[in-house]
Image (tube, rainbow over all chains, first blue to last red; front, top):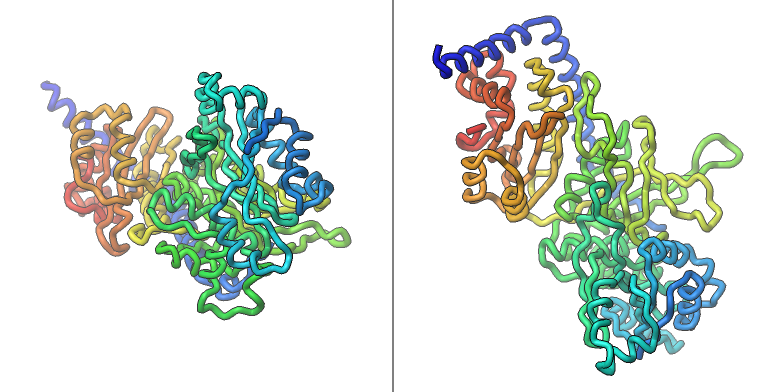
Length: 62
Length: 512
């Protein structure tokens, strides 16, 4: 087997393994966990960009 | 004229009493700034102080012309400047050098320069433009806002890497004005605008705005809206992030690091709180503004992350350094040891007998150049999305210790960094160095225990709905294979998982 064929076979093993992992229970669990974490982070960034009238008009005095 | 004195805390206070005739010795000796600066000079290992009398200070003179000159009392127009040196020498040595009899002193003076401090001839508020060397910029402490500031003394060109600091005088402005003034010195270096004096900052902040009480003397400070107005007045865009309701300080750390790494100083608005003796809760002392000048990174942190966690380099920040006009230059603010606490400790009020003062984060104002249009939240969200995709495909050797470093950079800084780096792929190196790139770029670097994993470049000048990812360069072979497959097979499960990221990539710059 030539080296190129060997690499090609390794690549397909990697991709095949990933496709199986995505469908597995552990893959689905990870997807749920990270989806929740992502939503939380996005929501917190969205909150940070919102303008609050009272905050913007409080005096910075000290 | 000049006067040379060896440095000690006592001599420092003695000189201040001698030259600040409007302020009593008792006030000088108990003033928290003086105590802080004296200790800071000890840390810098300062050996000698040289006093330069009759010094003309532009910022003081502008405030003097606008206010003090119209007082009945005859306030002085000229200031005094103290120069600090880490080399020990005496009055006779400097005199001999000035007479041309000791030429080798020039090199020693230049090499040992620790900075200067201007003294205003006013009652109580004596600390004017102060440029002191930072703590050592080592692998732990970083001061991206500091830059070489020249000081001329008796024909000598001295230089110190610093960011100017001065205390509020409650005439030209309060803390917000001082924080803006320091920040403008850093943004001027990056974006080339005129740096207004404190009195001009307060004037522009309040111009055309509804005022509740008098503008000068400015005892009431500024609102955040007025601070934004002052930023706009120098030709920059104010970007406000409200961080009052954050669960922890991770987003705060990420934001501070992302802009500070580029040299843009975040102006931090904090709510200072103290313990209520009679109840088990806290009471607000008031809101305060400080300019962030640097940060410290813990080096011995475990990179192993928990399930559902995104790991950033900025998570390892354990301290920030701020120009706090109530404390002094590069004052430490320390993060709590637990992620559940959302306050920082501060040296504010220590000398006033306040105990247990906390700085609760209200938000950050960033003074930005108008072409920095994509805010941190977008590359932040995109990196988290990409990270989620990597977790979903189950490559633990890649993701278990994966850490992201997201920071704003300028094209010339990025190319300089690549030129001096050990990027092993010569084709990639040549391609990036020779490519035309936008002036402002968000640069995200992923590393794990094995080394460099990927670099992603975002066009910070683009519109937020555009394809603003300039390129994704995967350095890890398995990631390279994976992204190539996802790009060629967008309808497969793998292709769909990465589609959100890959669809934002302009042209075909994915992991060539």
